[in-house]
Length: 297
Ligand code: GUN
Image 1: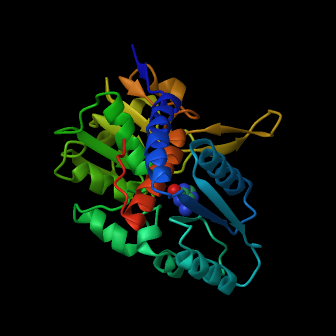
Image 2 (image 1 turned 60 degrees about the vertical axis):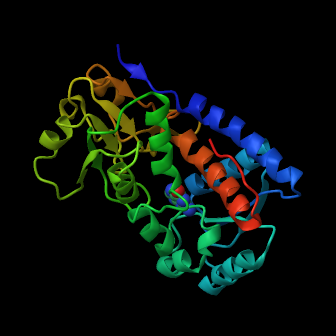
């Protein structure tokens, strides 16, 4: 039987543990604060940011939301980040990506104070992660690790194949699974749009992570018997539904389910974990900035 990995349940457990960490902070007079910055008209980005704010409210994190017109001068965003960096009530800053073309994304990533960089995208945090001295693990890769751990899926010695080489998922996850650590020690292959004989490589995976951003790209013929399949994709495709679209992953679930040993659904797999790990990083950030010892799940 294929095991369906329940990201909602694992994320709920993590949120519950975080509520206790937040109580510890509160008892020391600290309320963790997360600022989200949206400079986009993309409906998906708007939805993600509002879900992140709702999560904050649920666990007792102060959510501060800043919206900037997508056609405003880039300076407005840079100044907003400077203000949030200087605000002691803000422990974490998340600038929702992607940004409009006229904004220098590299400048944005570099201008968030690395101690408040709960996305883990600042070059200092990227470097620390690669060196095995991570401060904030990027939320989606960390969420994938937590899902594997929750389901006792061993990474040590496993062939982990990641399809997708983005800075947000593929590259950091490859580095994390490679680390000499209980939740690492995998043999990692990163595949991408120029990879030759892709199916041959994906079929050899014990753990296959689909993070290509292409709807239903991974079919049953690309998955080895008994593999764990982790679907990071969230694609909106036109459909005859009330909203006019439906969400599908990067995995063709129906064709893969029979072969996989375990599989994450979309929705309800990696998505809720990404959101939970943002709360985790925010609680960690509040602890680091106030010298309060917080236990993290
Ligand atoms: N856009 C898509 N995923 C992410 C993420 O993890 N963080 C930010 N800031 N933007 C995103």
